[in-house]
Image (cartoon, rainbow, N blue to C red; front, side, top):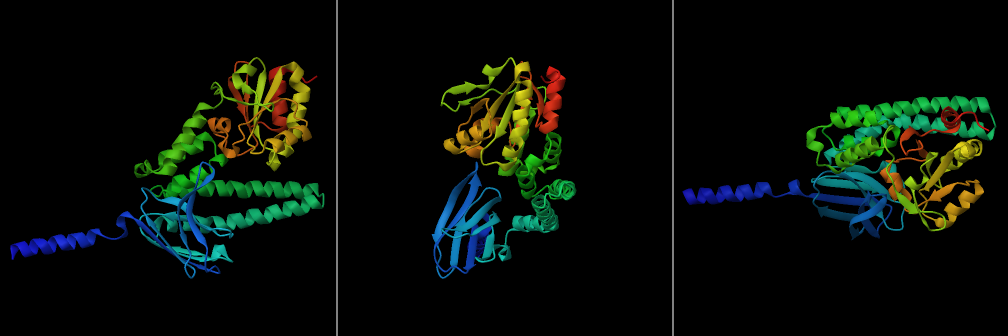
Length: 367
């Protein structure tokens, strides 16, 4: 009898240890598409990385596997405009996708996804407000109504401030979920270093091994190294002729390291201001190094010529994986750092009149 009890105990223990506790199982349906190749993938270093793939069978698909910590992955369909983000964790997850109305898709079984959906619900009215203001701005611009444009711009800044506040507040309130470091890292371009440091300190230590917490801490470390007063990290990239050009070789002048790209509308809009700064202060000891986040060499060169950017330019043509921009923690463009004659960072992200005023402070009145 005793041996029988031991056997029963072991069997029960074995049964209770089985199941999806240490693996994820995604069961999905796609309404509107019956067949095709379905991918489970994620964004990594700005590129798509395929985790798994399977064929749709009568509009149904399944994935299973293991994951160390919840991550935001995507279900997509080859040759169809279907990209559904979901936080994958080791649980049984059901995904019901509406191919013609992605926003109406439903995801169940992931507690992390539930936290993320809560964030999306809170952010939705702010996004709607920002979209409406942007449309007002476009209408005012088409009507050449400067007053209405200025009003819309001011209102947009207020809505954007609400967006920034919500992200930080939500992250602090949900500091045990990987959604928190994910949101802060994803929106890092909106925040000062102090905001990022404060957010990181508020995260629960259980998140230390998560991908997003590690990325956030890495970003903070990079930004700490490129703050005002720090020596500018050196780098070498190819110029427009394909020859290597090193940042430190340009020491001796006040130097603006300008991160931009031909495809970046705000960058192209800011270029006339940079040209004006060059024209007024170049002969007084001001220089510029343009660092492009382009992928196409031809478009890069074409934009340089079209915008009359007559200073030195470099690029590794790696888009958001540009080694120099990553070295400086650039998360959005246009972006820049201003260096003194010894290569020390003295200002960041100066635009328009702010750049001209700083140059006048450093070099005296323009010629």
